[in-house]
Length: 147
Image 1 (cartoon, rainbow, N blue to C red):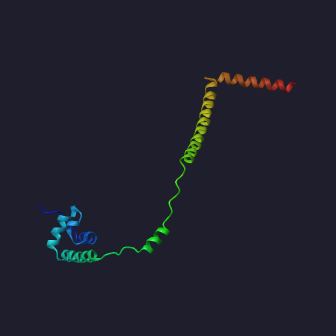
Image 2: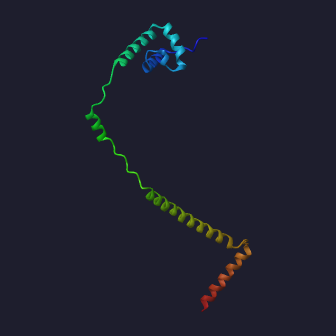
Image 3: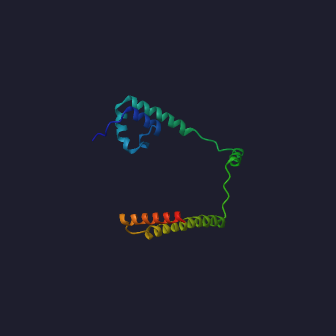
């Protein structure tokens, strides 16, 4: 069974990324790359180019850094932060939690007060009782005006 075709652009991208040895390429692309390399002179040329670069990279060696360079790098590296005292961390945490406790107590008190106010009012108000309250207020106003 023949694998799905691989475009020359994708082939070139894989050669640039993984080198000239198809065995190092992602497994999903290897079979299609092998077919394209067998059928296309352009693909073979791209593999030869990638092989040449691989050879240059394989021959190159990087010298170990000098002692002076190591010292300069270590001197310029960021300094580690001081380790905090566990006791001070614990005390900050307790202060933070006590603040949350105070907020919780105040919120509970406000909710309890609102519940008491809501439950202590009249359970049923009809038009006659409102009219009676209005008449009582008029009587008190008129009594106050006479004195």
